[in-house]
Length: 537
Image (cartoon, rainbow, N blue to C red; front, side, top):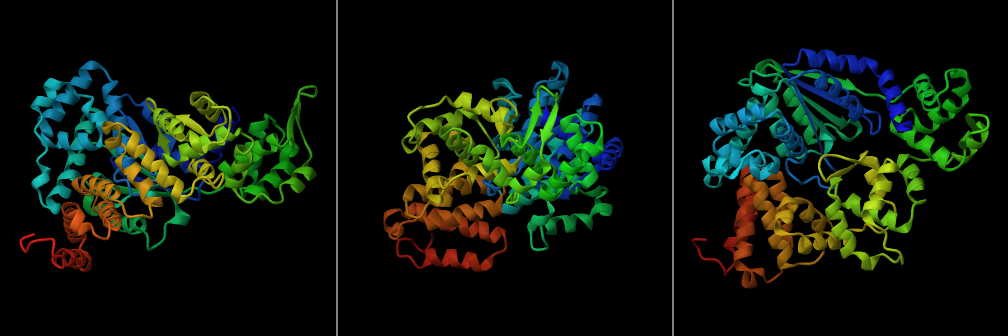
């Protein structure tokens, strides 16, 4: 309740931005809205205010996807989340609309449907076996890199046009764009610049302005888009979301404490503002900490909040940042609960409880507590503590990336070596279908901590490289091939000739697609200089 009232107050303070959103939504054609500011200032919450407008509009659709600092190499992750949500909404719509959408997809997309199903499993759930027999097979494997890349972009464009013909406007929120991969930014640009799409589309991108500079990929991509607005008939609206000023902080505290007189909370607000600099998320955690430490209490006899401003000021002198505050709360939990939070943080910004349950059971040997707590019960406690929240079917997500960051750094448990073992546990334990689904996540975990040459790790990276390459995510594919080559044993050309040849050949092809000719020469030279390969190879 405190969290909700705080954000209600926050939305009131940012009413200017909200009304700007509303007017933008009502006249939506092709709009790219960029929300930027520091972490915790309310960018994501502001973006979600559009949901209310969508709910009020009969035919509109709203979806969101989030990028993750733990799995930055995973191609299309935020895009896939958003389009998976759109597919689920189609599946839940009225039978007549659902069948009409399905028919339009089958008539207009042909082999693109099979392509997108590889990325978006939810799309496949719209079709039955008879429908699938009518869908053309994916013929992109024999295409050149340029043709395949264009084919993927076209697939997203056509699919979005089809959705737009039934639901409009479509609003897509992509959060934490500073961590987005190049392939995702390519798709974003292709969607917003699609002059053949007559239907309204709004893409809202949120990013941390302090983590984006002139050398970053996102910065340069946004610069390019600004120069294309007239040519491709779309608008860009940029909104800087700032921290709250002193008066806004006071009003938020008044709302949380149900106090009408602003003078009664003024002194407390001054201390809170000084400690949090008006950052809303930081402020919420700071107020929670005051309650936890007994510095702010509700007196049932007096029916009011009681506190001593001087004691609060003295006791919080060393408060450094929001992660420290979260650490304070987390360290009051049981040992098992703390370990579980760290496990969950390794799985990314969102995860399946069943996957976490599996890893928990497999890694009990490193937990030195006698009591084996129930994972479901602990996850419920994590939700009650506002560390996590449900998102979709059988999925949980962190309420904020700072909470995930705090969990990762809660102790010295999550080292590169631990992430390596964690990834190996998933690699050896997940069923084939689940491993295919989480291939990039598992490979990224292993790559963070692996320091030895192992044939199976090179093979895993080749597998991830092929999947990324197939979807034209060349930058991600390049990283996986480089890691695969790194993991090859020193005598790999003698013992693992085919694996070595595949890695170097694919690496050269990917580097050529990226225009990195020096790296192409390096890979080609490595094949030429080995006696294990023939001249033709």
